[in-house]
Amino acid sequence: MSSKKRIDGQRAFVLHLYPYSETSLIADVFSSDYGRLAVLARGARRPRSAIRGVLMAFQPLELSWFGAGEIKTLAKAEWQGGMPLLNGRCLLLGYYLNELLVKMLPREDPHTALFDAYSAALHALALGQADAPELRRFEQTLLKELGYGLTLDRDVVTGESILPDAHYDFQVERGPIKKVGAGDTATRPLLRGKTLLDMAADDYRDPQTQQESKLLMRQLIAYHLGGKPLQSRRVFMELQAL
Image (cartoon, rainbow, N blue to C red; front, side, top):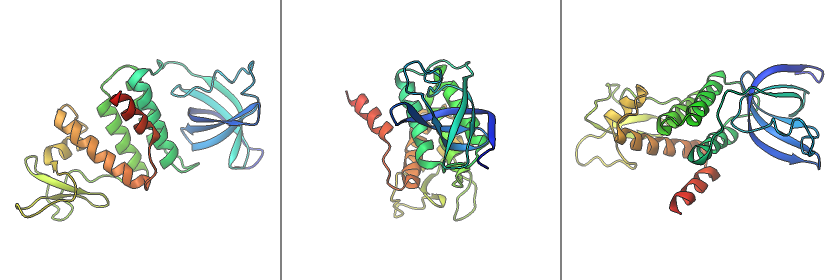
């Protein structure tokens, strides 16, 4: 992108805001066609700034920017509306989605399918729909877009189809391996074949599928985060304890 080139009319969401000088902000945004990038919002910290109230998390925006460096300059921001505000538990889950994007998604790496999955998840959470299916769909899309797509329908050793009544050890960089015999001890909790098949079919009606899929995705995301902790998860657990 040349220093004079301007990008107009990009669908985007604000992931995080950082103070920059006494009057400006840097917004970490996720855009439909240009991925995650940082934009400088000049004067956005001034009390009378028109843009200050527009740069809201979890709300659909239309952004324009210019610049060639790592940090672009925001030229225009318009709220698109149409999405209720997140609150309570769903607000914390929204911060969890944002933190995953900030910590796992490289800058200026377009992922239109992931953008659509993120937007769909926010809409569903805002409307009060069951959060477990929405989180699992988003997490699977995130891993797939980053090149870590999951094998859920076959044993990666034998190539045989997953059996709903069997149990499997899911190895992070490989996939599910069927437990064979009493002497075969997995290093991770075993998953039902039904759970894997339900995940492949995007069917989370079974409470056990919900629980096992949550544990599996937590394990996979922790691995790909490379030890970086998720602050949103820590806050959520502390609030639950209270």
